[in-house]
Image (cartoon, rainbow, N blue to C red; front, side, top):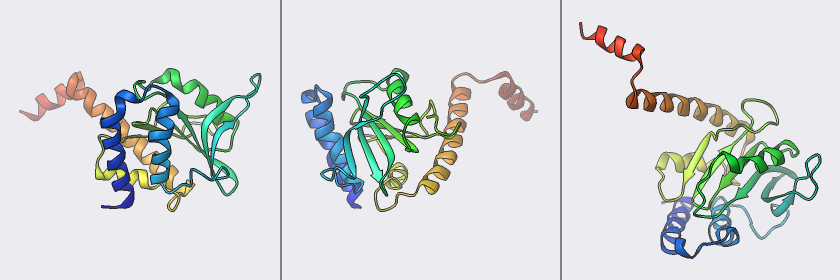
Length: 200
């Protein structure tokens, strides 16, 4: 078992055991998010690498802060916005990240509640964060495949071009999965027609 896999497994156990006591975002950040970043190899105690409360001022708004910014080669690479553990992540939580993303050099953004991590980029339009994540990782419900995808965000493996290629691939995989799920739930006339014809 790899070190990242071991740490994620320990985090999953912690979430199950202590979720009832995690009532605030600060508790989630301390108990779940920072250990998650450590599992990826980042030094959470080095403020030049993992910057808490990173200021990302936008036009008309001053002093806006994103929970964490991961810095690579003195440039902001990943923005992270945290919510409470019991918070179901949805589109309304993206407005802050949209604004932060547009005024930084970051190519990736993460929205998390400590258990679920949604990864975003700007695949649709440069410097404009996509509305849909290209990758979602659930600490308590993941596969070896998703762990391998997560590992590309580790400090030792991080490569913007490689991750962007991976993100493009995952985007289309997710579209196909969504189409299949939709057809399974409510088959289209086209599919039913094709199936009927194939039976003759």
